[in-house]
Length: 374
Ligand SMILES: *[C@@H]1O[C@H](CO)[C@@H](O)[C@H](O)[C@H]1NC(C)=O
Ligand SMILES: *[C@@H]1O[C@H](CO)[C@@H](O)[C@H](O)[C@H]1NC(C)=O
Ligand SMILES: *[C@@H]1O[C@H](CO)[C@@H](O)[C@H](O)[C@H]1NC(C)=O
Image (cartoon, rainbow, N blue to C red; front, side, top):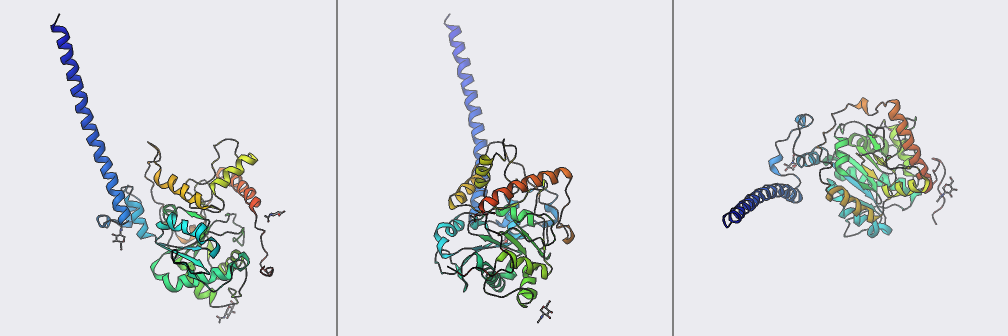
C-alpha cells in the first residue's frame, strides 16, 4: 500500500520536471525572438539605416523578401522625401508642433513654412500674407525656398497643411514605382480624368523633382506662365501653372480604385458615415488600406494614428511582408480599372464628395479677386 502512492508521487514529480524543462526552453526561445525584435527597433531608433544593411541594392528588392525592418530603412534612402508643412502663427502650437512630434519625424527633411519665427519649429519666415485667398503666394514662396536650399538633396517634395497626417512609409512605397525625373504631381483630388485635372481644393500633394524643377525654371521665371501676383488660391493657380509647364497629375489610387490621399480624416469619415448611413455595416471601410495621407485632423488624431499605425501590434494579424511595386515608366501614371473597380471607386468618391461638401470651402473661380482681408 505504501509503494503505490510513492510511485505516483515520483511520476508526478517527473511530469512537473519535464513541464518545467519545456517552460524554460520555450521562454528562452521567446526571449531570443524578443531580443532580436527589440534589437532592430533600437537600432532603427538611433539610426534608421544600420550599416549592415548597406548591401541592399534596388534591383533585388522587387524579387526578394527582405527583413521587414530593412525595407523601410532602405526606402528611406532610395525615395528621399522633403516634407514642407504649411503652418501659420496661430497654429504653430496647436498643430505644427504635433506634426514635429509624430509623422514629421519620419520625413527625410521636415520644414515648416510660416510668417513668424518659432524656435521650436525652426519655421521659415515668408514675407507673404496668411489666409486661403493668399495661399498661392505663400506656396510659391515656399517652393522657391525649397528649390533654392534643398533641391539637390531630395527626390520628392511633399506639401502638406498642418492638419494633415502622412504615413511616410506608404508614401515612399507608392513613389518607389516612379522616377523622380517624371514631371508628375500626386495628390488628394479625385482622379476623374477630367481635362484640367486640378480640382476640388486639393491641399496635400507630392511633386517629383522634375515637376519642381520645371515649376521654378519654366513657370515661376515667366509671369505669363505662372502668375506672380501677391494673392490667389493655391489650388487654382498651381493647377494652371503645372499644366502650362507640362506636369501631369498622376494616378495615386490603389488597385481597387480607392484614393490614397484622403481629403478628410478617418474620424470625420466614420462620424459622417454613421450620421448619414453611408456605411450601414463595416464592410465599407473609409479608405485605401495603403492610404498615404489624411486631411482635417486635429492634433489628438495625430497621436492616435501614430499609436495605431506604429505601436499597436495585433497578434497574428498584418504580419504580411508587402512587396514594393515594380517600376513604372512615365506613360503609366494613369491606370485602367475594371468595371467593378470603377463602380467601387465611384461609390467611394461620391461618399467622400458628400462628406466634403459638408465641410465646404466654397470653390473659388480662378479669376475672381479675393475679398479684401478683414
Ligand atoms: C542610407 O544612407 C546612409 C547615409 O548615406 C547610409 O549610411 C546607410 O547605410 C544607408 N542605408 C541603407 C539601408 O541603404
Ligand atoms: C513667357 O511665356 C510666354 C508664353 O508662353 C512666351 O510667349 C514668352 O516668350 C515667355 N517669356 C520669356 C522671357 O521666356
Ligand atoms: C457650404 O456650401 C453650401 C452650399 O453649397 C452653403 O449653403 C454653406 O453655407 C457652405 N458652408 C460653409 C461653411 O461655407
